Image (cartoon, rainbow, N blue to C red; front, side):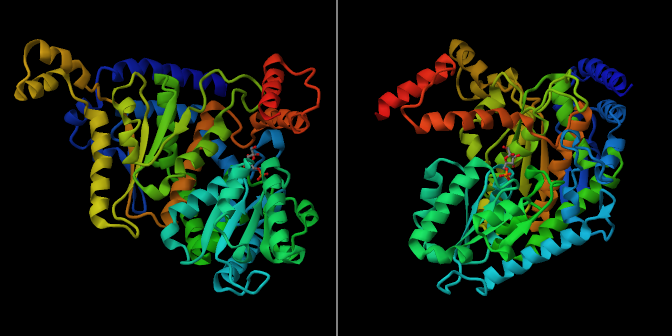
Length: 547
Ligand code: F6P
């Protein structure tokens, strides 16, 4: 029934696309002077402008009909009600509880978890405050100057992204670093300039068994023991995990272990104790502001009608391009150097959540799911890949993000940054026709064959869609809003595609095979029998190179 309704709504959108295809976005602006006012949504000072899209009022009506066909409102209700929406792991997905300031209970298996959430947050805050004011210090009594978070995926990308984004709010003299890769270069290069006597390590791992994190943690532990003595370990290590028994085995003091719960997915865990490095860096008050920004976005997503709901609109526009126009990628371009890691963060959030081809109840997905998410900060991208965005054969919808005013940066630079951001969105939409190019070249004195030879290269097709997120400034509250809006966008799309956004079985096979290959790579005499020809051949070739 739901499937039939979704198929019908998609077919209607498909037919409607032909109609919309007769108009460019620029035409739609010319026809409707109120377009910008009508096609925008607000959340506090954040303006989400979705006027530069290939959409009309009829498109929006069709997209909302699709959302209703997929029972989005019911799915949203189930999410917030704590139903076990993560079907394959039999868990709810309640990261919203970590930023719930409503005073309302959040029930898991018939029990309100808010008491536990608040207690754990207070523990994080007290520890963060202690590190910041020097009460919690290194074994030799010196205050910490460097915090090294060892974790990967959701136990790295969130705090790393946010610590960079909010660096103006960091305590001066207290630096945060993030080590993720099992490549020893990551740990070595991070530790090289650090004084271990004033370095605090946070081992962040939901499962406390991830190969990369455990390998890095063991190496860091050995480095500290060698430099400061085994007895210093207790002072220089703390951990964040749901597996408290495994943490205890590692030898971390119980009062330095911060927990969270299995109903918080790794890529949704920045709001939990996994945010410890961020909380230490920006302080408990700013960390709470970040959580409150997320909570504001939750309220908006939960309560705003579909038509006025920012994550719903973000998600549906993505579906429009992915499933009706067939565009396979989506770019996120923050005009904010400090959001440099935001696209990487969103890659995990979006692609690990929705990069699936099986529906919730096991049937095959019959339409395209997660597009490739990628991006880099502007203006740098303009001098690298924007050529393709403007004139390439693929159309890539873009999210631009920009602040009205700089945070701890030069005002003059910021105005240039802002102008560039708007100019790119405008250029992508307007393009430049052959007629305009001919006129420009003629004015420059080019005629005849010379003009004809050059002109086609200077034509921009235009009609390339983008959204704009414009907000006063990037502060903890704003970052909280942004992250939670994207989380909910991912959920909206999962509802349309009928997939479970909260498991990640696709990462398991590689882990399993790496576990099987590791001993063969470790022992150059080990047999490669039974491996495929390429894998065996590559191992043999490596042995030749190093042997
Ligand atoms: O391999 C994928 C993954 O399980 C992610 O979902 C997760 O964020 C990451 O690994 C790290 O896991 P953990 O926090 O358990 O070390």
